[in-house]
Image (cartoon, rainbow, N blue to C red; front, side, top):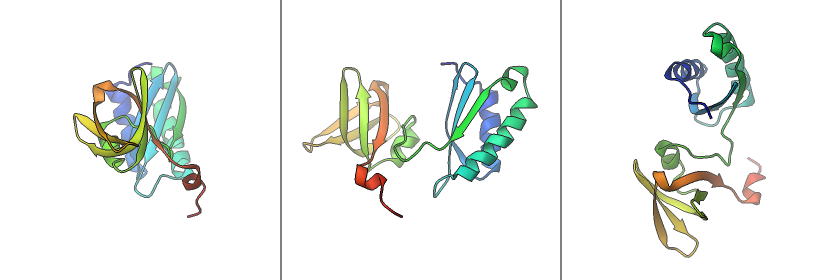
Length: 150
């Protein structure tokens, strides 16, 4: 995966902010740019469409290397992946599925700070994990919860 330059991240974040949303996560894989947006109450399909149009125009008008990027703008979804300490802090109380070397842990996130998290495993025991130990983390929802009417 290619690193996202500060200039590209700044351009993307500025466009997203202009549309009343915030940048949740940004990934660049070769010529593919995946942009995840969020906002209080949840970003909509309309938000993603507007941001995609505006970003496309801004990318074409900027550096040559950015003109060739294939762009995908979406929300992180209800079963969102967690990348930063801020993401973990916002998920306290949620059920998570966490991948660490040689093991997958499922439980409720009880605490999150800048260095580590505490996850309560089904047996009720808490386990502290440093972010450097976590390979992947995702919010988990019960099937019934996914299909609840609002």
